[in-house]
Length: 150
Image (cartoon, rainbow, N blue to C red; front, side, top):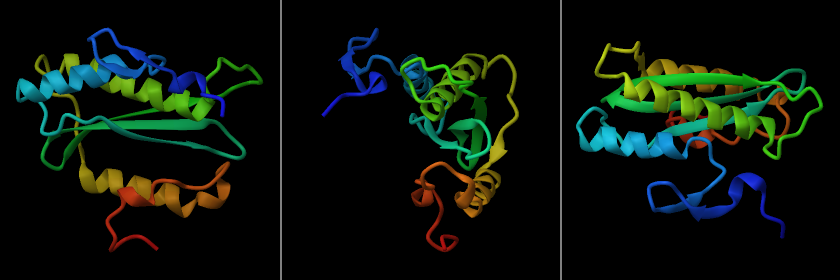
């Protein structure tokens, strides 16, 4: 089975092994460092990506800065028939992770606007409710509390 460009594993700049073509790898390291420095409530950068049948791909990423308060970035990517070795939805998610990492560096300088967890969950529910407009299926039901899943 062929390995995708984004899934090639090797040595990362911080010495760990991981996906070397993950544009968000350094942002993930930044999140762990921010967590150790007590600037984040959770060291894991989370995300999702979708591709609209009649539109661009979207990538979302978020970090929990304070319990229930999230730093969120969203990126859209349109392929225009050009391929760079990474599918547009995964590229959009990687870029969103990268953007969160950049904002984590300035979190102490000024308080970035944070989104309540419930607002993000409502946005994800709206994506789920439009699953028939997506290329492929909506693979993020697991992000929603069981009470709200249909």
